[in-house]
Image (cartoon, rainbow, N blue to C red; front, side, top):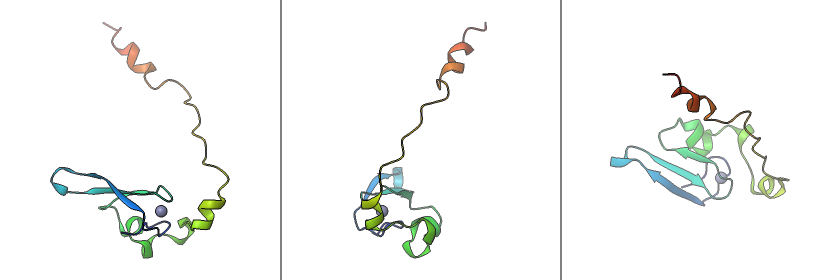
Length: 86
Ligand SMILES: [Zn+2]
């Protein structure tokens, strides 16, 4: 199997649905992940949009992974107060 985004052959199957209805694959080179049931533009290297493809050199030259910003507010803040309204 070949990664649709960077064309590496370092692809792992990370999850298989019960009964084999779908599989999730992930590239260990660029970390692109996809489910085999997604459209060809997400799963087939030749159909993957050129503007979103990566080369090994582009991955090597990338300055850093973008940081995940902090949450604007706690995710469970609303859920905690919901039980107090009896
Ligand atoms: Zn890749």
